[in-house]
Length: 235
Image (cartoon, rainbow, N blue to C red; front, side):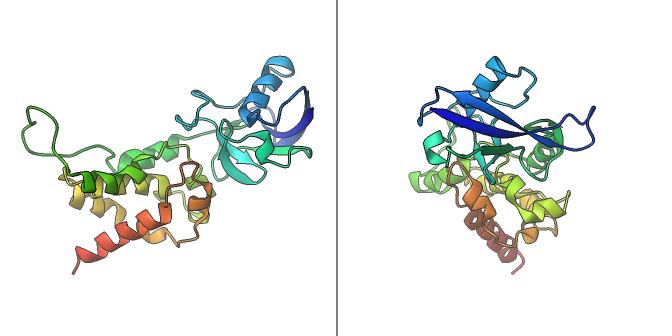
């Protein structure tokens, strides 16, 4: 079986604008992942093709890209999930500067992630063992903790496209994960950060983030709870 991959190519150091290049790959199977096909193109046809990947198992988030106009993980999308008898269109994540081909500059994305203090803040002396938390309190964090920082949600968000200063859904989900952690003492400091025009209030509940998240996190729901927390502390 054969598949055609239509891939956006762009080298900012040598080209003025992106272009598309078609690659035909033979002897593919419906259960091959898009990342498998990208590997074959790079190894067998064009070694200059540039993209990110690491674990290839949907854990690291490295291979986030736009596939047939949707942000996805290339390692988690099978050809049988796509209309793969037609050219499969691959582009870099939107709203981010392209370093080369399918690889984008994630510097700003990680700067915003760090800005929400994505770590446990606790002023008590460390216990002899772990800091105890009830099963119910832990379960309330499990979904937000599944975020793998692939950038699919943030790069699908129109609010992020129109403002470089917006923290974005990925960073805000990380803020949620610690704001609602009963072991954490940094709630007020984090809410100060997210309770701003470029924080939760720039989220307009468009739900693109929910559709794009490969881990099926209810991103908008988590941001709504953050908004409630911001409002309640002012009452």
